[in-house]
Length: 368
Image (cartoon, rainbow, N blue to C red; front, side):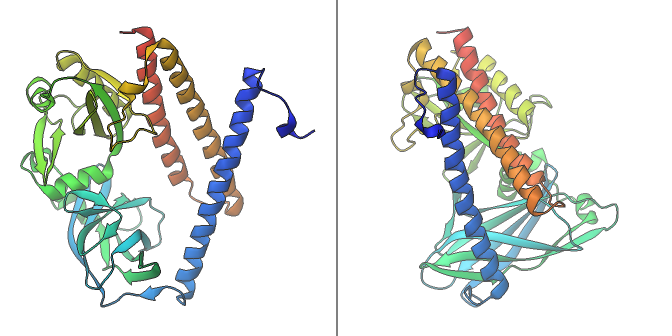
């Protein structure tokens, strides 16, 4: 009998598993589409026949290098010298001697994160610190892959390296650098931290002064944006960074943090220092930031909180199931595959859902 033909609505447990089955099928389709897209990109890069070289149309130069939170961060200036914006930007790196290191990239146009370059932007590449037991230097070459007017293009990145001497060359990001408004230090920090957005119920318009005076955070201005750094509170809180914006009857607060402990201690610090006490809630994944449609408007009463609590638990199960499937797929294709990145991405998602679940549980325990 086909599982789809069963009438499961009367059985909440069976209904739950049917929902999970539908989710798995949807996730599988998404994974297949992503895999095909990556295979197509790799084939294009290997052949070189379908990816247009943009040498002369795009200029990239090394700008700076910093060490921060166990990662080496490179800033590269990118100038688009031709018509049409660069979109769908991807960075591909190769190391000599060959190593497998997780890396990520982001593009800043001024103080805004973007995935397209009109004229000029700063490309930031963050690489996990390598082991120096065998080699003292790792050289990197790479390419920037993008689309221009729907046509695939690429350009070589300037060579850069990670050297053991970097860690004694005073290029590590220090608290004083952030406190003095060093923009490169701020961008290096943001690129190496995890982030999550929560909603705070706070009616008045004085959150900035409360963060500075009550919570003792340091204001850092970057373009039109304001960031708040924890630098003199305690080791468990220091290093975290906050950015906020008005949303409905409160604020959406983006928190940049090292690990779960760092995040949890900062949340407790905010809750205990800001008066009147703020109610911090997880932001709805489907909230509309443009209209300020925040979680505070959606959750009304214990019944709604309980339902959201159950949704968060199910999402954690889905994340774990997806991780298991990706882990198995990677191992089957290559028994020597490095699955660290798969684990790290899954763990980051779990951290976000665990925080949301904990906050909702606190609401259930202490309803207002």
